[in-house]
Amino acid sequence: QVQLQESGPGLVKPSETLSLTCTVSGASISSHYWSWIRQPPGKGLEWIGFIYYSGTTNYNPSLKSRVTISIGTSKNQFSLKLSSVTPADTAVYYCARDSFNWNYQEYWGQGTLVTVSS
Amino acid sequence: EIVLTQSPDTLSLSPGERATLSCRASQSVISNYLAWYQQKPGQAPRLLIYGASSRATGITDRFSGSGSGTDFTLTISRLEPEDFAVYYCQQYGSSPITFGQGTRLEIK
Image (cartoon, rainbow over all chains, first blue to last red; front, side, top):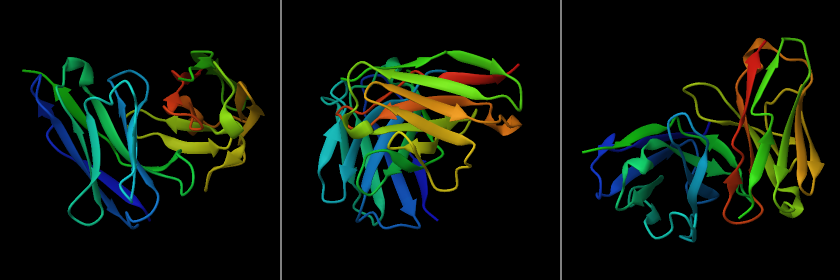
């Protein structure tokens, strides 16, 4: 059974960098696409970007200048970095595994709330 | 960027009734690469439908998807209490991947 778990600080100061890690169990990260999606409190879903195990990435143009998604140095982890955050970046951040060939999300982590505040 | 507009914003129905949710795209969705997700409070979204009409693993046949091009529909044939939630459509054929704003299905 594929499981994903987000981890990282729940509070980030404005102008700093948000860093999250997604740990995958029940599947190898060496296949499929792996995505980050966020949801501001009480609002809808926003796709942030994905990474393929080979390292190929694709980011939402609205965030592209601030986002980096990478495969973790530890096995079966991938990470998200979002720089120069503002309160508008406050959201629940989800990591997910996409289907083998297409970029819809089959498996999701439970999500982690990140608040941007001084 | 493809903008997805869902309607209605809120749908009030009773258990046992049929629900019809709409998702309209600002331009044609490539190869009908459209998915539907269900989200309950405090939970991650759950994949229901992909490719406009294919049910995801483990999804009851009370859920069905249809449509092509710019107009897509999610139908729930007989509402059960656990179906009341927020539903999102998503297009994954063009970058950036985009979601609709969601339809809240509430108990009447």
